[in-house]
Amino acid sequence: MSDVVYIKALEVESLIGVYDFERHAKQPLLLDLEIDFDCAPAGKTDDLTLALDYDQLSQRVRAWCSEQRFELIETLAEGLCTLLHQEFAISRLVLTINKPMAIKGCAAVGIKIERSFV
Image 1 (tube, rainbow, N blue to C red):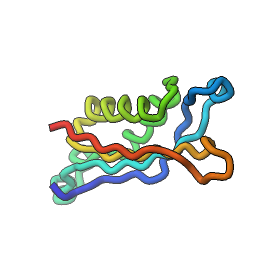
Image 2: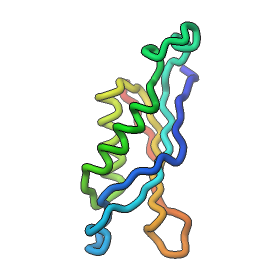
Image 3: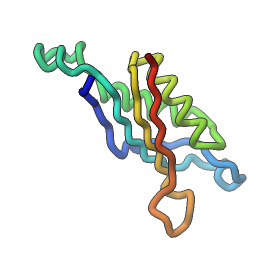
Image 4: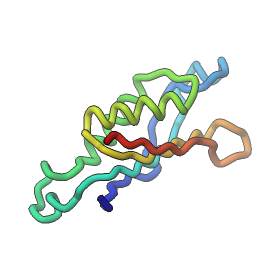
């Protein structure tokens, strides 16, 4: 499959970090998602039910991140990949998580992972 639905710089908040000062208030995170999805059926019919509803997916990601507590962004990433596979039946995901407030004087630090569920 060569179709990819992507979401860039999705703003979410989560309680995340290993240090005490990070555990008292939610921090902003920026997520990039690249999701393998067969867009042909929706493209041929103009039927939203055949498309990946990226608005619904984005809302779910924001809600889930906001409800969770993590020490590591790696744990957040694994959990989010599992959630999206289970709830949206995706087969492959590339997820980048940027933590802009992690290091002073740095635009962001983060991770990029790829998971396949086939």
